[in-house]
Image (tube, rainbow, N blue to C red; front, side, top):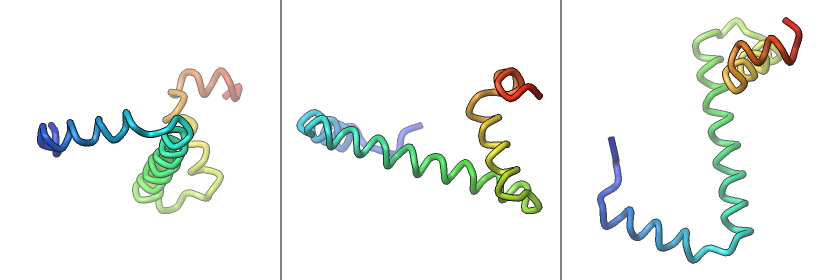
Length: 75
């Protein structure tokens, strides 16, 4: 499902192509921060009783997958 028309998408692509590398990097970093905060907000919404530490742990499980999380954190 797309929320952007084909002409708008072409325009966006052209803008991204013209961006200097450092601008693209900064945009990527900011988008990653926003995505991280959205995931954590979703965890907090589903588990309002969680502490900040529990939210971080759950976020790591989502990011890494439960299997890898257990291997990395020996749980």
